[in-house]
Image (tube, rainbow, N blue to C red; front, side, top):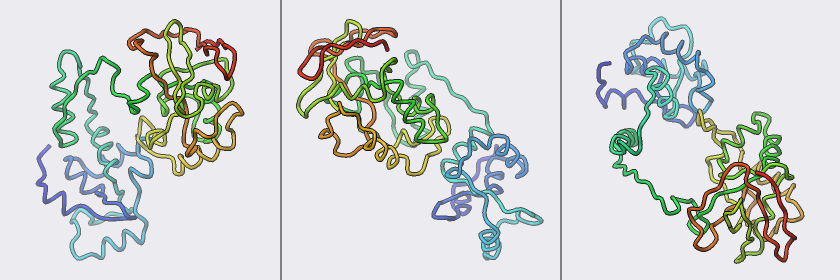
Length: 293
């Protein structure tokens, strides 16, 4: 593929529907393929190009484009309106056209991973492994996040386009507990400033607070496409279905799913295994309960 000058790319950027986009014909020139080949490749992979990745111009948008004083000569004889690709769409198109898949051995060649990430993000990237607790989102609750299978299944019913597996991949919790009701994990936090002791197998943990979610669960982990109003719908349904055992005072907002934990003192690094029993240690809230995860 012949390199395309940066100024050529900048000149090809248009703004439609509030998005900076590149059109299919210009991208075909960039990638050194015919426009029809590019469009065929996209149509074979439509599931990877949701509306925030790509859209086809309307007739009025196309007419306005053609009326501009400077347009590409490649439009000659074209019958259908072009497709516009956002920044996310351009990145996905690169993967579709080039079939690129990169695998890195973190232990053997971390520098190669740093170089690839640095080139992709155009920033200096340093990659390192932290063995003493990792890099938790919540430094005060560095233990595994925990959720019940029933919670995942219930959340899936709030979105017709999701199932339990897709909710699981979006929330990415560390421990999943089966055989308990939805939001059972809300038993693992109490009043602010306190913890709820529990154990997974022989590993003692402390539940701290309902886990605040970010933008990540709203996006498909495979394609990056988002569900409009995801956070609002979760918050509304969470408030409406909050179980009696959950301390409502711990919710400054209801876009919270799963529970944050931290290792019991001097217990970091202990092993947790699939099939270990989850035990809430008797406290002032409830007697000990045992469940399988």
